[in-house]
Length: 97
Image 1 (cartoon, rainbow, N blue to C red):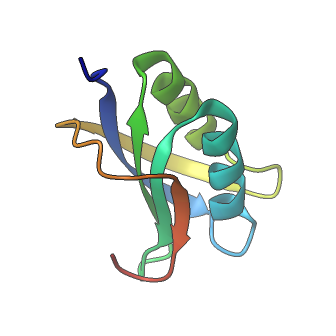
Image 2: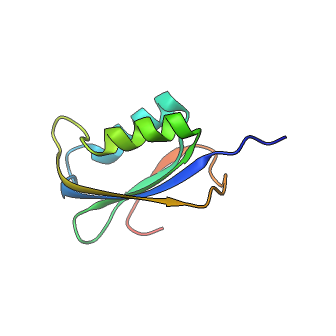
């Protein structure tokens, strides 16, 4: 039987572009075994989708709220979505999907 997980869609606003936020998110996701992606949005925010075991995704979400030591997170909106198990790893994407 396939293990069910959770999926979050995250929007992070603040000083989060050009401060290694996406790379930090990728590193944290890999440590936790979380899959998905992060990309810079045109409005200066970072958008992420993450999937995995509930506890691991919760830990990843907590990381998103603070980011790297160079980042300043002013707002972090997290929405739960239907788990799709569609990613093999956690990647950094350029603008858009």
